[in-house]
Image 1 (tube, rainbow, N blue to C red):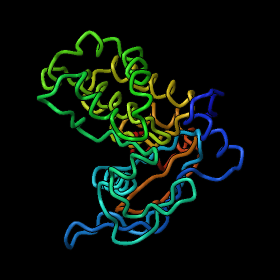
Image 2: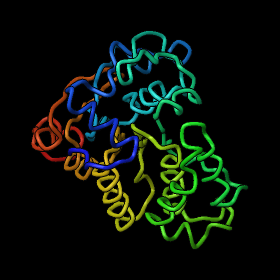
Image 3: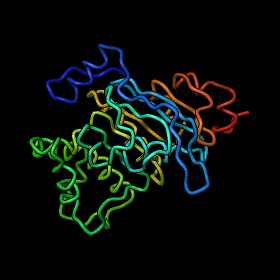
Image 4: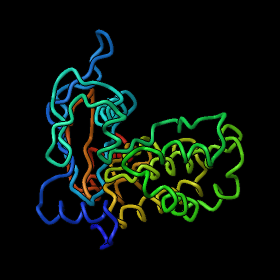
Length: 258
């Protein structure tokens, strides 16, 4: 998917990167251990500016650990992570956000005791997005009218689908260039899953690069420009999203199709 033209900073940046052909994100030789257990080993992939890239694989494949390393939530044991040509390996999450990386974590992790509006304000006060706070709030409430209706409601009292909307909205409040989504459809009804994927497509069409970890492989691979299959923390297969969707090995291993 290509970025739509716009005057906003993230979209202009994405258009420039796409024109040069350089990937926005490059991961090489990434490794991470939980004590003596290796979760990620020699993992490498890249994401082109303005595209949608998927990481797929079974439970325990290292997908969540990988994106947490990219976003600065975990510090890798080895490897390099480059964002827009800059080495950000081991950069703390709060500094990665200021560069334009936003992680929407698995399990939503909204601030339960804060209202919907307060959750959004907390995210929108990062230095990168502070000047656009009002515009970003309007954008989130336009994308998610239900959040606007519940803006004064504590986040902990929202439904699972509403909390997922809030988690994505919180990520958007930071003005991301790269939006990392970890299992965004987990636990949602089929109708809400369709809604979330439509939203992801719309955000990508605005110029936001998407990196997605997702168990719903059919919708994910249909949308993805490129996808990587992880097993035991390594990339074992890669290709276009639809190419992998038609791959017999992928079908057998992850879609239950012989």
